[in-house]
Amino acid sequence: MEACSATPSGAALRGTFAGHRLPAQRQAAAVVARPACRQGRHPLRVSASASGDPGKPKKDSLEDRIASGEFTDSGSTKERLTRPLRRVLAKDPVGPGRMIAMQLAKIGQRWQRRAATRMPTATGDIREIVGQPVFVPLFKLYQIYGKIFKLSFGPKQFVIVSDPEMAKQILLHNASNYSKGLLSEILDFVMGQGLIPADGEVWKVRRRAVVPALHKKYLAAMVNMFGECAEHGARVIEQSAKAGKAVEMENFFSRFGLDIIGKAVFNYDFDSLTHDDPVIQAVYTTLREAEYRSTYPIAYWNIVPLRYIVPRQRRNMEALQVIQETLNELIAKCKQLVEEEDEEFVEEFLSKADPSILHFLIASGDDITSKQLKDDMMTLLIAGHETTAAVLTWTFHCIADRPDVIARLREEVDEVLGDGRPGFEELRSLRYTTRVINESMRMYPQPPVLIRRALADDVLGGYDVPAGSDIFISTWNLHRSPELWDEPDHFNPDRFPVDGPTPNEQTHDFKYLPFGGGRRKCIGDQFALFEAVTALAMLIRRFDFERAPDAPPVAMTTGATIHTTNGLWLVPKARQMQQEQHAAGAGAGVAAAAFTEQRELALAFTEPAKPQQQTTATP
Ligand code: HEM
Picture 1 (tube, rainbow, N blue to C red):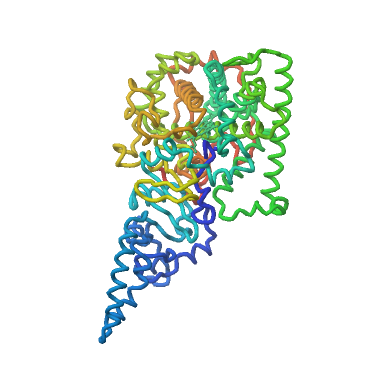
Picture 2 (cartoon, helix red, strand yellow):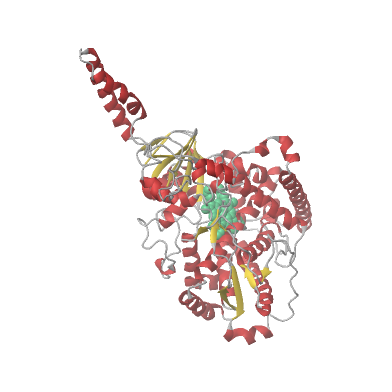
């Protein structure tokens, strides 16, 4: 998930800007008539409707209200507060009052000058911005307040950064001055001191231990496994194609991603594409809890008794227990295997029987009893699963109505892969396919916001950023900025030329951050790109995908990654020209997939779900 998952999003805005919906009553209270005050720190309120129903409050659009200056704290508050006094004193016919007023005016000018160098500040009442993915209002505010601004809600403040140079300073040049801050607090219950939330010495030591596990021989073994999993996935989709049923692609890719990461990280076959079991359920319960905590306004779960009283917290604790026990078993099994193998640990060590990261770490001498090892396993499981699933989901959304892109994809895939699976060389040749993924990650970055906390004072874009500031680098804003990209809302894989280098933060000088940048950059970037390209290539060559008739509109919801609100429902049909070829090959002997009826995990359907309320249309 957010962040790599772990994410971000509303997380940090707990209590201020969280992406949850308000109960109707509280929402109504938030929109009562407001005095005709255009600026200042008033709670956001909208005036009664001008349309003839004076009793009915009307909500202006966020854009109108930003433009009206409603969020703006401009100038010096002290100057504003002393202004009436100055006016009274200035009317003093005798003289001393006028002199004091003059002095006050001079001081006021000083205050104003100082205020002019303060970071732009958007102030408001959180309640007016809830109900949409948090990065959406941040984009609107960015268009008004610019590259860096403070978002203030009562005592809470966040610095929103949407500028490549400042992102570079935070992530690269002055990276040691920034910790994961709020993110670590939110993810502690599930990742502990795993690589994503960890900071300082723990992070340094673990990064050094884990990164070597993803070496070239390991990646080659994984690429082979991606092909097998994609074939398995294609067989599952074929069932729906034959039955004429739509597939909820987000769910499909989530399961596909889980199966892959289970094998890659600890050699565990979830086989979630074809069945459900308590471990799979436990993983999803935990993931959803992490997202829930990242957007819920009050951290009530920190009150220990509530963890036992509130049903969802009890369920979460049970799920964590199941995962911990499974991890303990896997670690014990792996340890036994390492002892039996008795192989010398060399650079690029890879066990044929078990090429997983866990095996590498145990063989390298990692302490198998340590909580740290489990934290890292959990982190990799989450980091490597939902991110890739989200990238594939949004890629299929982007190309669903683009026959031009699909035609070019197929031309390349047919030529490079034919009917086979990709290896390293083939993946390198699937250049247009890779660009499609690169462009999908520009339009829908996972996670859409990176979270940091300043450890010491810094200066960003000429503004002071004091120690302790919570910072959101909005990748979404960087990737969608009209100042940085031509037609940023248009899906155009050709913006990254096929004969050029694979785009990343370095080729694009930090305006493109699909995997972050600097020392905390994603360690699974190549792994993830290979996985996504393999899945896209192998599915697109076998199936046509059409949007399901009557499916709810595809909308975005805040989570660790960007989720769809009601799923992405596509109807697969066997690609005409290859239908016979595949029927004789991979399609034969497919076991019918058994899926649970559970709404959250249901895979195939004929009647699309009705749209829920909270939808933010995809731009
Ligand atoms: C398309 C899929 C993926 C995307 C979009 C993605 C994105 C990211 C991003 C943006 C970061 C930086 C977060 C920050 O700076 O706050 C990150 C970090 C990380 N990612 Fe990924 N990731 C993906 C897949 C993976 C995979 C497959 C793995 C593991 C096998 C992985 C493991 C990690 C880890 C461990 C970190 C933390 C690194 C550190 O802090 O030292 N990610 N990822």
